[in-house]
Amino acid sequence: SAVISQKPSRDICQRGTSLTIQCQVDSQVTMMFWYRQQPGQSLTLIATANQGSEATYESGFVIDKFPISRPNLTFSTLTVSNMSPEDSSIYLCSTGDSQMNTEAFFGQGTRLTVV
Amino acid sequence: AQSVTQLDSHVSVSEGTPVLLRCNYSSSYSPSLFWYVQHPNKGLQLLLKYTSAATLVKGINGFEAEFKKSETSFHLTKPSAHMSDAAEYFCVVRKRGYSTLTFGKGTMLLVSP
Image (tube, rainbow over all chains, first blue to last red; front, side, top):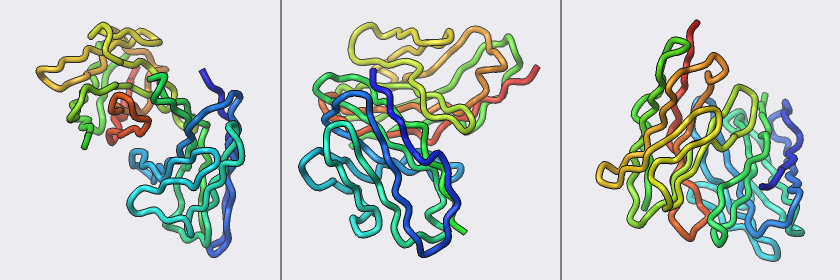
């Protein structure tokens, strides 16, 4: 199993500012994922982050708005840029390894409120 | 493409009665299927997973689920609900050999005394 430490756990931000969310995994993982959970909704995949390459974004998400870094196999960051109230959500990072066919592990989530 | 349908947005039960949370999936290939639970202000915790072994899968806290290919279902059950089971439950599908997960919309389980 993998233990993921995600921070901050919550934040209240002013519109127009940016917030960087960090995820630290206790073991090396090939792939990390970033999800958004809007109020009352399910999880939606934002992007997949592989070490050493640019993140792959899902439809409706762009790098300028959600830049991602993956400097090594245990760490990743997601930045929510130029925030608006519509960005108020829970953001979660996750790991998974398709080769091992294991389950995904999730961070505790970051509850973001934009005012 | 794959999709997951959780048939109930809310399920209410009394403590000590059985729990049934329904999930149907659509997948072009043999899928891996998971149930996750999310307690208020907490992260997602894996309850159980199906990855092509036994079709009846036992998970934590007394939950189990049965993979029925003919019905494309993966319903979650528990014989006797406990107050601590009150949470949101997500059915999740993953195409075998891939890492991307597809989440259902979630079912909120309410347990009354």
